[in-house]
Amino acid sequence: QVQLVESGGGLVQAGGSLRLSCAASGRSFSNYRMAWFRQAPGKEREFVAAISSSGVITYYSDSVKGRFTISRDNAKNTVSTVYLQMNSLKPEDMAVYFCAAPSRATSASAATLSQYDYWGQGTQVTVSS
Image 1 (cartoon, rainbow, N blue to C red):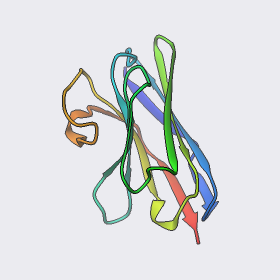
Image 2: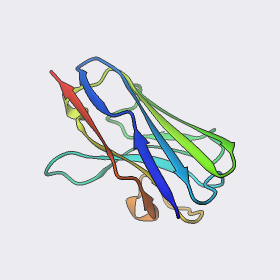
Image 3: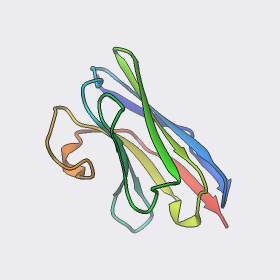
């Protein structure tokens, strides 16, 4: 059974930092990109960051570029862990953050939501001003 489990969310003051983790298990994700999306109340789910299977190539939305860093650990074949280091957090970063992974390789843009078949339950990030 495939599971993506996020952790690390919480309450932080503006300007602070949080590190999110996502443990993906149940099948091997080491050959696929993985991504983070977020969804604020009343808004659509939006792309935040993605990382290639090797971890060499990363993608970011313009709104988080330079503040967030995505990384991954494929050391364990059956569990891939993806991280999102979030620095200089702003109130507009407040949302539920979701980890996502596809079920197959795809040529779609990393930000294309429809390519991601597996999703975590989300972790809340609250930023106080």
